[in-house]
Image 1 (cartoon, one colour):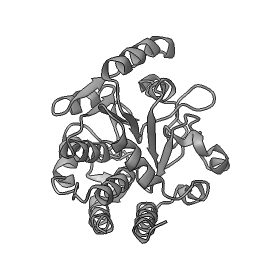
Image 2 (spheres, rainbow, N blue to C red):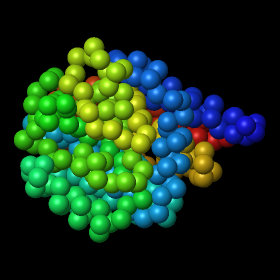
Image 3 (tube, rainbow, N blue to C red):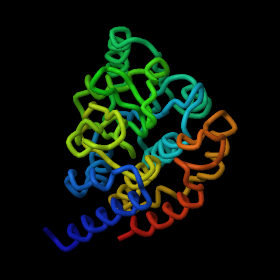
Length: 282
């Protein structure tokens, strides 16, 4: 390994540590089950593929959706667009209609598995994505149902985005913060004992964070390292989050229509972004 490669890998580990700071849902235990460098590998894999990048997000809360997930998804979408790539969102109502007003969006129906499977096959054949990413997207549990952090069954409000991970043969990334998100099937052993119904859906690279938005930021920081660009430069979290809240988003932990992320004031996330911008420069 060259000195430059060693610095890059160390910086990626620093990024992974930073996005986990402040977490209280057992992701520190999960980190011990992962090979270090997952943010860097995720960034490389997303950038390496040809074709569009499909980004799934949207965790339902009642008839609305969480603030955690869409904010990081928009950051990643804009970073990829700034690099000349073709990002797409893949999500279901109501968030599909919110994002679809401003971004390329594939609306996925809320339907049974057997009805969704042909839709996903057709979408993959049409889009021919280079990578598929899920950010704070619920993953199916071992009993075929979906659950939130409180153990409530939310199956009837969910599109089966897991099928993109099952049917797509290319590079996939799951980003989560609690164990019930797409991708956590990679670390089921490490999730044992946590008070959640874990997702069994696997992915190529799992990225964990204290807040899933921050996991997306960690990947972007690694993209900064790889490209020499500041891909946070045009990202305005406060304005975007306020727009999401105005369109119905709520904090998944408090269930309040507030500019917070899993109970964290937005200022915490803003400070995290500034530290990641520093780490994203070699």
